[in-house]
Image (cartoon, rainbow, N blue to C red; front, side):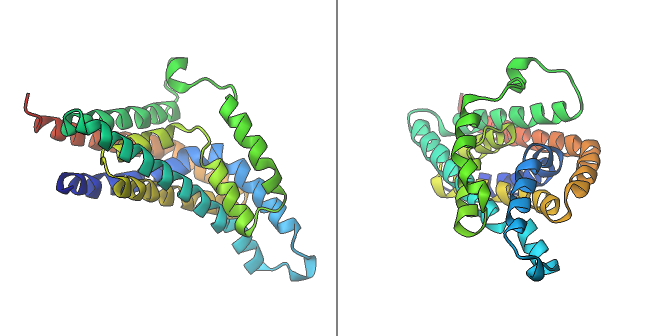
Length: 245
């Protein structure tokens, strides 16, 4: 547990920064339309005479939705960390952690290189087509878009939290290295919180904010992601160095 706790104290802040950067460079483009659809639908339910800046602000923040996403991410983090911890019992724990951190670095590196416009094999990027999982989740989520407030917004966040995403895969691989369900959930919660500011800004300020944020993130986001990848690789190398060969 001491080793896992030390690893968590290093990786969780990194995942928060990855979420913060990825939220600007990736999430506003991929999830921005989902956010704006919810904001528009929610504001339509408010009578004109009651419409004010406070209603616009709270409607754009979509707090229940983001809490739903965080619930899903934390649950996934707990599951993968617990499973990896069980597998590590049959294998060397430190070697398993090093490999998972390496996989996490690879996922984040792919997202960074895509942001830089570097051509990558389709096998690494996953292609551009809509997956069967995305279609299924879209059908499940569709009824909740009609009034995405309160518990319905929270449920919508839970559903959409399962959407396939390279950034989420990378975060899951990193948190799996903890081998502990509680630490895994905490790591994914940190990542989720990091993704929130950019999406909340998009919801509050609209497409103009989303465009400006993406323009800024397109310049600096990939660099920060690569820096985070380097740190994960360093953690993997440090962990691997303690393995008795």
